[in-house]
Amino acid sequence: MRYWLMKSEPGEFSIDNLEQRPQQTEPWDGVRNYQARNFMRDAMRVGDQAFFYHSNCKTPGIGGIMEVVREGYPDHTAFDPDSKHFDPKSNPEEPRWMMVDVKYVRHTERVISLAELKEHDELAGMKLLQKGNRLSVMPVSEHEWFYILGLEDHS
DNA sequence: GCCAACGTTGGC
DNA sequence: GCCAACGTTGGC
Image 1: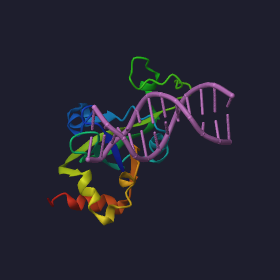
Image 2: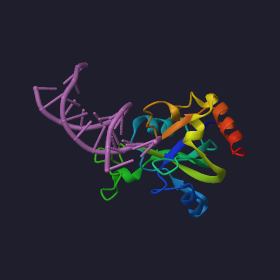
Image 3: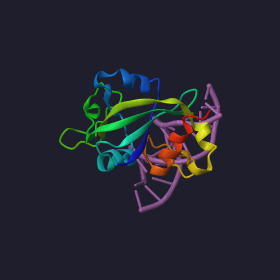
Image 4: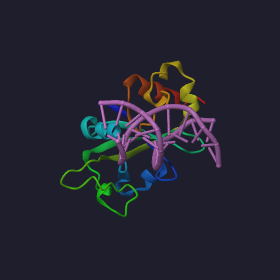
């Protein structure tokens, strides 16, 4: 089992939205970065766990946990001219972009903010914290995963 | 293949 | 709203 962190702007799609979806499941569409795509296409497996990270908002940070329930398949929003994620260079015969389906597991007991993550030396190696990192889908090590979960009931 | 210009991300 | 960092595009 692997661990991941996936970013979304809560104004677009939040952990609350995921919880309210039918089956509490949603395709993680709209990723238009090759490295992030490769993680979803090549490495994510059913049963993997992921932090739901809220980005570009008042308090960026981890707001919940989700699980991969469907492995990489073509992101059809790239084919749709009306979609804001439309990419004319992708087509159903040769899809350029991939997505996975994720399912709500739970909210974290509180938002574990980016600022807080930065305070912990044990997490200094996290991809999320590297300067200039803009990946929206990235791996989290098992050690980082459980260390972060251990922060949950502190304040 | 180089690289300047441009668009996007995302914290602050 | 600002802007640093980064990825992509396209002329050459």
